[in-house]
Image (cartoon, rainbow, N blue to C red; front, top):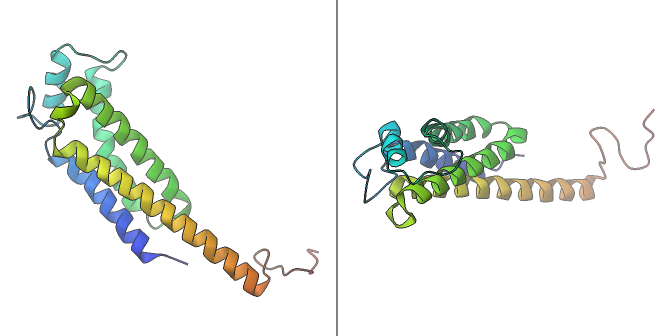
Length: 159
């Protein structure tokens, strides 16, 4: 059983994650006119570094945000991968937004950071809603039909 509304919401969340790469992550202050790797280099050059987070590592985390959106698009058709893709998107987005908030200041975060956060939250919500509906539908089907497994009914032997 597929829930097409949840699929559509997950696709929108993935689109927001991908689109965040093309929007400014720092809205005001130092680096607000830069994007991508140039922005990361400028923020790291300011000297307010996170321990253990070099410019290369921050760039990798930032590039994983839109990549996680693409993974969500692929995972929409694969039920078992949906939750993993959504969890990956949430973790990567939280790491990137936290790093940018630390380096640029929380008040200076731009639309890109908020778009990525909304995309990750939307994807997680759609995946959770789908899982809850699927579990409820499976339970209801089992109660109506008595099916315990793919081919067994209650009282049948599994010879």
